[in-house]
Length: 284
Image 1: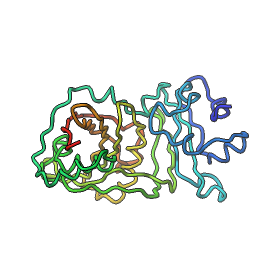
Image 2: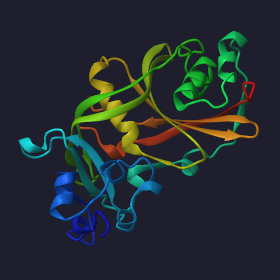
Image 3: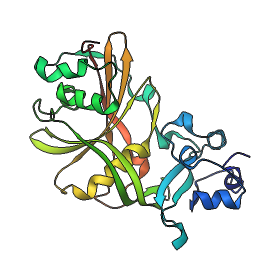
């Protein structure tokens, strides 16, 4: 039995639809299911969404833990959401739709001493690729920041966060992400037009794909409470592709409702500009 068939059986033919939030294990026990929590409700890409949800044009969102009574504390919760237009587009950023320009060769002006370590390893991790993007000056170039302002090593990590946001456009419905784990690929400070900005980046490596909007949104909403109101937030989606001409850094700056003026909407995440910068092999 498909994991979400019982929930989808209650779905009307048209319009916005929301199921949950509910603890995933409670849902499985009630319907006699044995399903892996992470692979079922933690969706990073459109291709990893289950067949039953893709067919129903419905998204699954992981919503932290503790929804329900006291027995639910610490247990992973989820919700199912179908947007009014019965499309998955409001939930994903699709690389082929975003990165439409031709790649440009980027030539760093940093010293060889700063960049040599990146050429000593056979394959760089996503964290190392982010560090390289900053250390080389590539990220500053892509975002139009002062050249010297964001070459420092970005902070990365994970934590447990609680925040509220909305889904649906015509009649937004609030959802609570309660005490849930959020991974943050990169946070740093950049200076643009003489003003400090906090830059929050979600990074992926591999050929063109898609990314769930909540991956970037959750990272922004997780750190926003620690950012002074007078410092703007720049949300960035980075896709790094290996090519025969070097590493291709596809950088998309995204608009996002950061929640400073009311409940933020998940659907506010949209790519507004991009650069495709190719960095020649660092000695590989």
